[in-house]
Length: 134
Image (cartoon, rainbow, N blue to C red; front, top):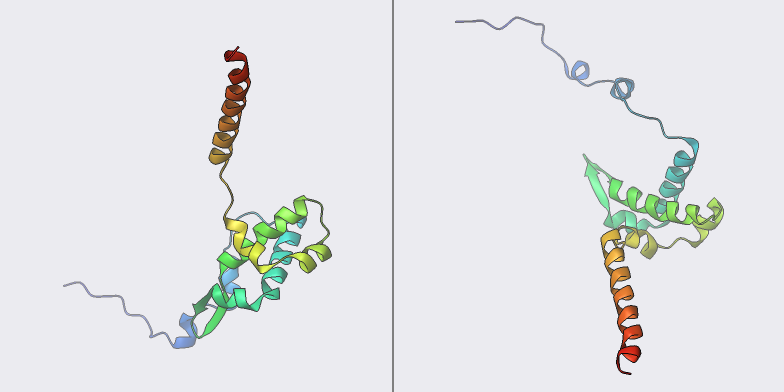
């Protein structure tokens, strides 16, 4: 029979990593300044609407925090406005909770292509109609 190696018992405070240790091993790209600004605006926009935060909350232990989905939706809505050239102050003043929630529902490119093809076909049919009846 094999025997497990003997180790001194760990206390509760030794088993939990320190907060600094949690963030040490993160890898990946750091966001550039424009991305960081949009993320900051997204957080501020999501904080502007507490009813959205209540709807999109997740529970981490005893604390309820805003879900990452809400921040992503707010980020998409803020990025759209930023691409149109709006200033950050304007974005925060004018953005609505409906706009944040509708940020996920966008027509796909596939549907756009089909709509364009149908429009072209209708134009051709309407142009052929009067000429074909002569």
